[in-house]
Image (cartoon, rainbow, N blue to C red; front, side):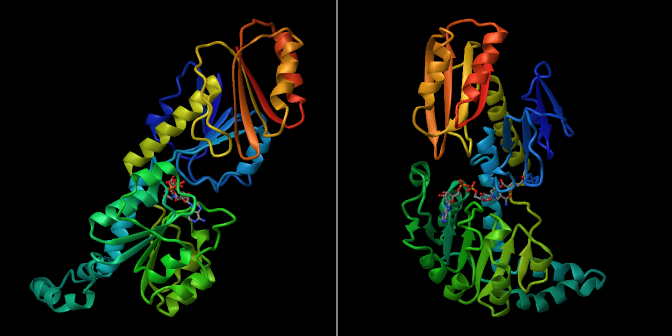
Length: 392
Ligand SMILES: NC(=O)c1ccc[n+]([C@@H]2O[C@H](COP(=O)([O-])OP(=O)(O)OC[C@H]3O[C@@H](n4cnc5c(N)ncnc54)[C@H](O)[C@@H]3O)[C@@H](O)[C@H]2O)c1
Ligand SMILES: O=C(O)CC[C@@H](O)C(=O)O
């Protein structure tokens, strides 16, 4: 039996993927094999001893201590692209919301309730206060052309916007998906200095943290609309306040309001609703659960952020999986440990991702529990090995 702990609400269609015969699913759990979560902040949490995998039903993994997990051989998954359409729709809606003064106009119209038959006249007289601008022909800058950024780019083109994107690490798959009409910015400064709307779709990392700061605001055209559906910490808050006060930013639309930001001028706060659609919650839950189940039951890895994708067909054979540092002679030491027990390797795969690697070894021989324990102990004792699992 595997134990799964859920740290947030996960759509039931995802949890249904775990059969009752092989899994228990609990919110409170002593020593889970797997953790499923959304935005739960795990950095303050002690990682359970037995934990093998964490699956984030979503894209951002900044709430998970990924480096510590990697060192401990805990595989961290996310669900690339599963909520991208939901966020894209929010970005498009946000541009329209802000450029047409919709929020202010709607709340003014509501305030007219109680004025009786004169409401239509008041509406016609007062609507001039809410005259907006069209987004057609305006220039949209997209920072980060991943799953979300690419969708936003293509759909903004179909709204007749001019679109320019910046992403020095753009993947080949995204490049194929992007319309050729999307212009390529050679520097992030080109986005800051030329766009009417700027939307950020990069992960929060040490490199991207507070990358939208006074220097960036200093280059922007007056009145630009900045949209942040990625993470609040990407923007330096003090510099943001000044940019809003000085009118450099005409509006800041953020999915990550906090006390400080709520007090700023021309902020449109959204309560982290970017991915909150039925469809996206289901997509993410199903993808996260499938990846977790496959890893727990077969050792195969798909869509991990800290270990490589590895897939070797599994049909119940004996299998050893090893998460380890990506250094020379690791496989040699593992096979030597197996050879000592006269174990023959039927199939093997080794893949690396950055400083870590993952090896799957399928074996022909049968062995008893004592040999199994000995193999596990020997492989675990190799310097650089983070975790060993034996399936039989
Ligand atoms: N508001 C929400 O509910 C919500 C939902 C989904 C994702 N997100 C956030 O949005 C982020 C992006 O999501 P995604 O699904 O598009 O992820 P993704 O991994 O598909 O795309 C991220 C892109 O950013 C690029 N990138 C990385 N560093 C960069 C840099 N310094 N400059 C320019 N580009 C850079 C990468 O090359 C990649 O193409 C997530 O990390 C998450 O924080 C928020
Ligand atoms: O789970 C959510 O609602 C938000 C997810 C989002 O922030 C993400 O990074 O995918």
